[in-house]
Amino acid sequence: MASLPWLDRWLLEALWQEDFSDAAHAPIRPEELRSQQWERLRRTMDHARRNSPYYRQHWRHTPKELPHNPEELAAWPRTPSRELCERPESFLAVSQDEVARVVSIPSSGTSGPGKRIFFTPGDLKRIRHFFGRGMRNLVRPGETTLILLPGERPDSVGRLLGDALESFGSRALVAGPLEHPHDTLRQMDEQQVRCIVGSPAHIHVLAAHARFAKPARKPRVRSVLLCWDAAPQALVRSVEQGLDCAVFRHWGMVETGLGGAVECTPGSGMHLREADLYVEIACPHTGRPQPHGQWGEILVTTLTRRAMPLIRYRTGDRGRLLPGPCACGSALQRLDQDVRRLAEDHGNTSHQNGRLLDVADLGDVLYAVHGLADFAASWRRGKSNRPELHIEITTASPPGSTGEQAVLRRSRTALDNAPALRGAGIPLRLRAVGHSGPARPGLDKRVLFPASDFSEEKS
Ligand SMILES: [Zn+2]
Image 1 (cartoon, rainbow, N blue to C red):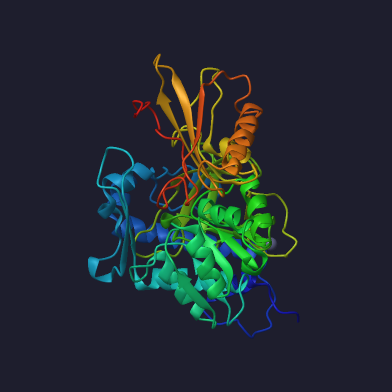
Image 2: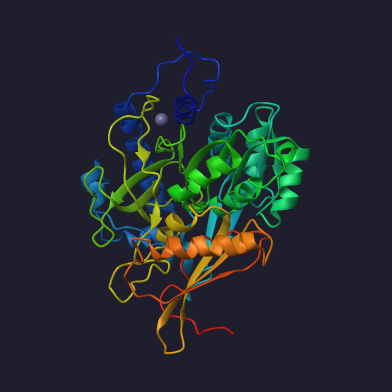
């Protein structure tokens, strides 16, 4: 029997907790997977109802009987993410002694202390296992992967990925979020980096600068994994060209246990981590499941998490499931790669024509501009109190150079012709803010700032 694709091997191991590395085994069938998921989902809901103060309270009016099918589950209330910001400890379903790691996410709004996500040692083990199997698809034993994610603390995402790589004899260089692309490119050359994992914006900055590297210094990267934030199609193409490599997309968040869904091959659609997650696509207003293939909010129910089970958790991300099986033959369903923040969330503000403008609309346009490294966008009040769209770009050319001027001109033309902006009459302020790196420091998700009200113009 031919060896199993990595996704199926991960799935078998994650379901049966055995090592299937050398075993010849038939891939799992979709109906077998669904029945396993359902058993886990009921077990998790039972655990949540008995042990999590939040769900005890949240479900006080729900039926005694746990759901048997998707229709029955759809009648259960969703879990809003703001509840996780306001009282994270009430979600905890094990004693504090059993918690091995807490990830804190500061609140972007005004209420509550911010999200705190708890993991037991078993929860972390499942994350490492998923990462390990997934990374084997991207990098070979003996090769080096550059990880542009935080890795200072034990069990931080960078360290978990590093452990996963080392589990099969690969090497990890955990560098943290990108700051200085030239230093990073030099380090990649010295350490012979063959794979990069990081946020789409940061990897795009590297790719933009790599185009200008001397031939002997060009990175020789084979694969890239874009994670942490949405990756517009124009960005993916630009990274493919700049680094001359295969680009894989990933969707996930701390709440999903970091990993969530990943492409088996570039452009395949992202296979969901269905041994650990049950995903619904629901109408954002009513919570009713959408017909297969339709867009809606991604709701997540964790299937194996002990410390902090989440049931019908509102991710705030908009997505859809792809119809039909993948060419790889896996039973795991796929998310469309084009995941975006929901329209009413995160500063996707309507302009005066009533059309919603999304940061992804700007990404689609700007990442296609040759020589542009990164951008940041925000709404501000102009002189006559009118909202103005301010866009700051970084380029791969020195400040004040003709190269930078050319990128600014190309960006202006591209924005003027963009379907999302054409004829909208939005005053647009565009300027270059240097060439040293990302347009915003750190790993905050790219959104149109501010979310609801307009900030005052800063001089
Ligand atoms: Zn596939």
